[in-house]
Image 1 (cartoon, rainbow, N blue to C red):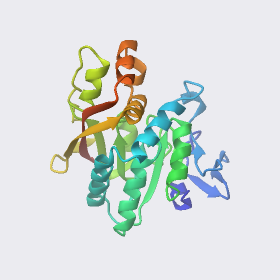
Image 2: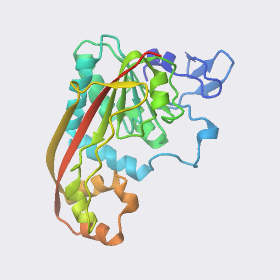
Image 3: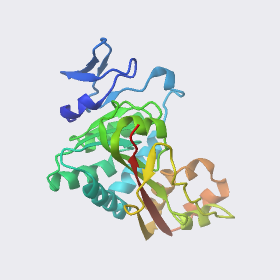
Image 4: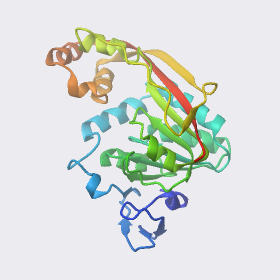
Length: 281
């Protein structure tokens, strides 16, 4: 946990700035939030908690951690880190909206630190199991339980905001970013995981091309980049990939059986990193 980042958090009750006192975050109105043992804090408003355990479940989080730390998506992690290094100024404040278990933040923070940028990073996610793992993996950042549509970050704190395969909360992203700040939005290419879908579904489909126009943001097409590759995975890694995706919730039983019976899986993968500048009010 990086205490310097704590000042970027805001109270989920009144929206005021939070300050760190020992192991407790407190706002001017006296609302208090204790840090967990791992160093993260739960800032998800009760009124926004629509399930007992919102966000990705423990099995999905564990599968994603194992898959990413095994290096299968390293080309995406490195491409994101390179893009952040190009865009982040020294001392940049970075927010990862929907940070998951922290593997992308680990790579980004290491790259920026190695480049002498001295960044501050706040990550948040609805899933407490993911945030707990992220806080252990990246102690140089600050992590919180929170959602993109009720983000626990102060107005205008972020210079750079990351959104990797998470919902696009335009109003909250604009609120957190300073005018002129930059947003990196990662979306799947049309053929991302098509080989996996060929196994799971009788009629596999390509991913739709994402719209690139959002209110309050100007696209920077010269900064956009697309990263593609091919993975060949053993049965265990293929199972992790399946378990960490939404397909785990919507695949017919026959497709699951076909995947489980394969000794290996080969699939295309691809990310588009869309880049936007936050417009002035």
